[in-house]
Length: 135
Image (cartoon, rainbow, N blue to C red):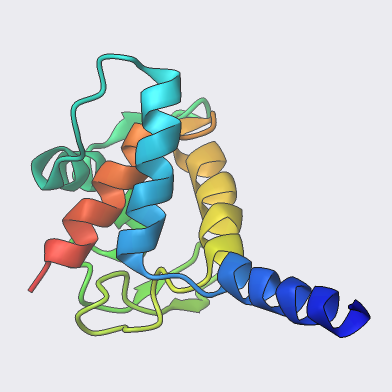
């Protein structure tokens, strides 16, 4: 009986950390419906706009996702400290959006840095929808 619990626990932990962009989109869809009853699906076009839209930061500088990730998500970006960021587009970086914990960690940090707030589930889903459609 105990070994059954260990196996179930291991399978659960694998599912928590192993993901696909499609699985993440399903999770964000559930959350988006909870946040907004009028939610009707993710949009690659909204995700592209979200990625490129410049916002005025409280420090007076214009900032967007593409500030660090470049205008082309197939390219490497750089942090403000000149550290390389692997491409965002799964077409060139198949590891992107395969670890749910990392995805949440980076949405948490980057949304706070760019938007100065948490991203909504719809924003996260639109963003991923856009990036998985980049060819």
